[in-house]
Image (cartoon, rainbow, N blue to C red; front, side):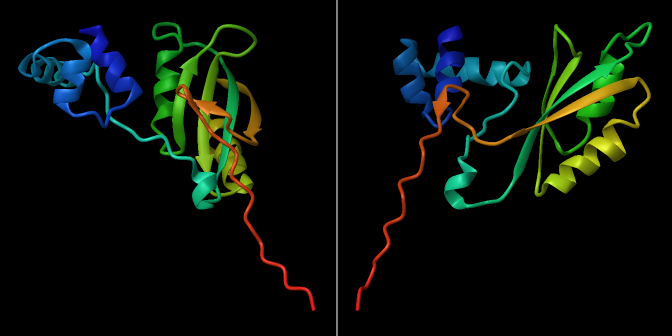
Length: 159
């Protein structure tokens, strides 16, 4: 039934009948499998990916590298849990390499993002350093390509 999960990840707007046909299983079986996946939290939710630039909604998105001192028993988990509770945090990952956690956050302004880092994130016990990178343009997310907007046509009147 991994095929169902792959299909849902690609397009969660497909009907159960469409999913079943594409996966080559009976519709009742597909419906039961999806319900089971939802109950077991294999499927965590359904979400649309929006190109906010096309509706001219001004937002600032940042990737923040975070270094932390792991807790003796819980490792990184306790600090990660404190951080991901904040509404601004969209995504968070434990990383290998030169930093420990990668956090994606969004805000209305650069100042709002900076305030989050300075007032909330950096004051958490165990956080030893941060580096903030502002995302200037999205080219691709979750296998979907963000196409550049067509230039607006302007009408010029010469007198």
